[in-house]
Length: 203
Image 1 (tube, rainbow, N blue to C red):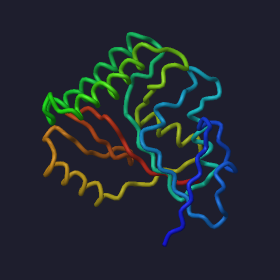
Image 2: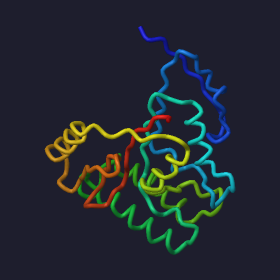
Image 3: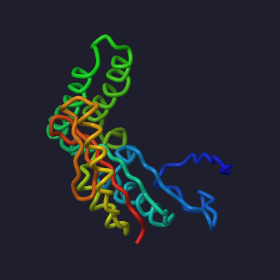
């Protein structure tokens, strides 16, 4: 049996302190962040970037591994026209995936399009300042941020990457892609990178 304890922390990520986590001295820690860092504010809104504060927290926790999956996007610009154009490119790929892989009348598709993607597009385009929570950056930008925070990237297992490529090629639509760059596993559609995953350790 593996002992399990759940502790909810009702705080903004950038205000959490290591002691809030009640990590025991002999505890093996893995931080798994799946696509949520795109919702953190950055230095265009707050001088002390919550994104950098979050990464400093990871450094202080000193986990055995930090698994970071990000939405790879370029519609975090403060300028409306640039943001609008990039959001259109990004979400047209997402909707194209639905069109190619799910019937139009599929209830799950309709729900995802209206309740998730639709609201994300609205927020990314129509909101400014702290109200805009859709703020994705590219994996290259996150790589630089994470390195500046004092974390070291772990190379991907080549066999694992090849297995993922083989599985996608054999079982998924031909336009899905899996690739690797700068030790990030990239996933996308028709050549456009939509998300990326990397693994880090403290130095």
